[in-house]
Image (tube, rainbow, N blue to C red; front, side):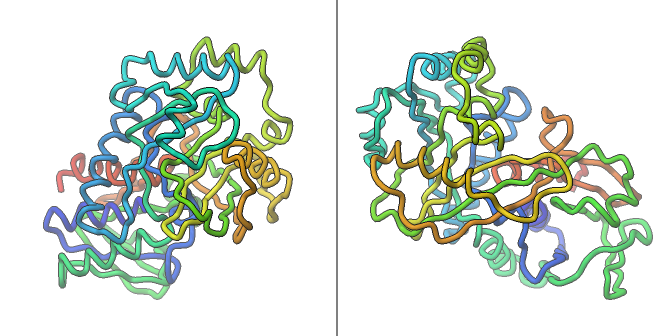
Length: 366
């Protein structure tokens, strides 16, 4: 998605673009995610500013490309107990709370916003600025729109891998073809070996693996995305003395702690639920998926919905690239004359990609 959004920015600014993709279609983290435009948990400062700008751009692009399925649905994090409420209360008191659309709501108010939440909880943190798109089809619809809006100026070349930088703004692919431009952007996702390692041997980016799943249609609307209080432990916006107290006095469930888990859940346009996730940082990654995290997520979701989860249709693992300095939004580096590497947005990639690409374009003077 980062690469596709760079193509979008370049075409928008009047340039001719050749987009090269290793696969016949993208198969990485850009598809294997929630499709959340996730403002609520972002760190204050540059990260939040980037997410808010990206939220504006997603809405604008979504109006132009209806197939993206952009939906300004917001999010709810149901709360149980005084410690979880205190963390949400501290978040709602942040100086940037209004920009995020934070608000504390009662359980009854949360159910007015999202009637599918019939389970037991006492209150919820509402974030009005969160949104969603359809991750599995977003790039397809963006490329179709690029061809339509820029006939003759946008070319998509799938099934090719860039292997070598051969000059100023020039690269050779694995078919031996050389592609030349004023600017080359290498948006490599979690692919950090091969050419990337040759260009930047000490790249300050790591790979992170996660597990997710998707259900059959719920049979009713889930009108917001949903998180649980474990997301407070994961996202930087919630750092506070109240979070320290929560961590000290209310331990995560053992399986959640072991797999560095949180609940995030979004309803797809077909009615199914995308649910996750885990985080694995130590290499080599496992090649299989584990059942305990799925069982834990099912239990948490059912406790919020107050009903059994529909049949799970799909389970998958994904890998994304994250800056080792997790306060950085992305790693952007000139690696050769006319060649730039943009990678490492971590779990921000889907949310922030339009603004990341816009910043690249502005900084390079497109």
